[in-house]
Amino acid sequence: MSIEIRVPAMGESVIEATVGRWLVEAGAAVKAGRPLVELETDKVDLEVAAEWDGVLAEILVQAGADVKIGDVLGRLEAGAQAETAEALPRATEAAVEPETESKATPVARRMAADAGVDVAHISGSGSGGRVTKEDVEKAMAAHTALTPPISPSPIIPSSHPPAASSAPTLSLFARPSADREERVKLSRRRRTIAQRLVEAQHNAAMLTTFNEVDMSAVMDLRKRRQESFEKQYGVRLGFMSFFTKAAIGALKTFPHANAEIDGDEIVLKRYYDIGIAVGAEEGLVVPVLRDADRMSFAQIEQSIRVLAQKSQVGSLSLADLQGGTFTITNGGVFGSMLSTPILNPPQVAILGLHKIEERPVVIAGAIVARPMMYLALSYDHRIVDGREAVQFLVKIKELIEEPERLLLEG
Image 1 (tube, rainbow, N blue to C red):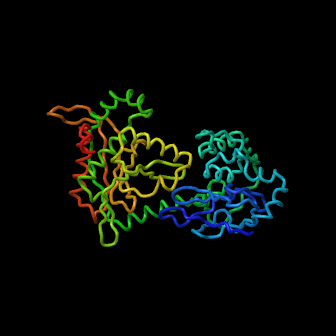
Image 2 (tube, one colour):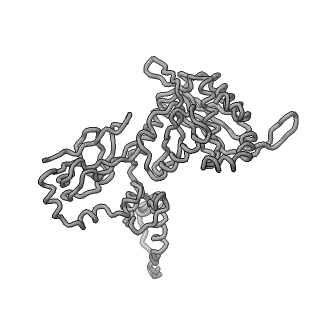
Image 3 (spheres, rainbow, N blue to C red):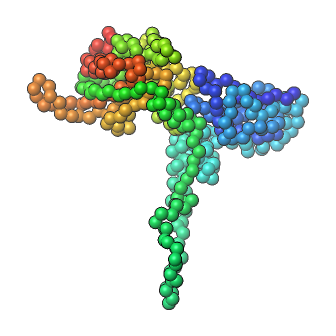
């Protein structure tokens, strides 16, 4: 019985994918449930598994091709053909998917393949010993360091001067040689990120407003409660839980910042699914804290840690990334002093956090040093007015500078 291997439904708003790599060669025996091929979407990487025992009879779409939901990727011969498949050398399967290779991220595998490096010989620093992009880069750098440099040919002086040439000298403007440049195809996720960011700028009347917040009270509270908090909940008390609670308090006061535009209607949302932007191997991803207004500080910190770990090893699911009514991004962890975050459509507002630095401020007529942070709110002016945006940040500032108010308003 011949069974078509098709691109499955991949979740909300995901209609296209790129074939990453085939995990099984044509003609190889497979068992039901075994992954056959990797697909890369703009949100996550996923695997298409065999539904029956049998033989992978034919591969119709090669790695690197773009596909849509329902497209046929290949054919699986099930039933009687499975007996023939059992007679195939087991070494064929092992050669297709070594166990150690399976412990590398998709990006690491592609980088290693392009560079001719065997990931089976690379020690992984990721979760569970998984080989990451950084591991491959280190292996490539080590290989380059061990390669002896090419000795230049000796220059032999000539008794005859070189003949004059009528052609102009263009050496200063010549194109760099191939060994000094590298062309890398944009991944599906990176292409989608680029497309969505450009669309956000073209389709929304985006503006950014700024304020600054004194972090003294929050930092003092964290210092006093950090040890007991970590001992009780097994996670450190970070700044993100405070800002998540403060953002929810501001969203309740200014509900248009928690809405979206659908045609000529405004969709006001009475729930608070807060997206937390985190850096992943192939670019920024925004996993979502569902019903964050119902979470405690500990639950927020625990959820953020789990999502961050999953993003690093590439195990975020579509469910982790779908939806979201408002986003918080923290460029301060990378040292950013000030930035203008870009909207995450269809959301109409995003809060940007930045590096905390001691700066001189005037308090009661005296100049004192305080730990200050710049805040940035980018918003769609079609639905959020400038006055609301300014007041939104003022509300954030008030809640962070008096954190006990978060218990009542966050």
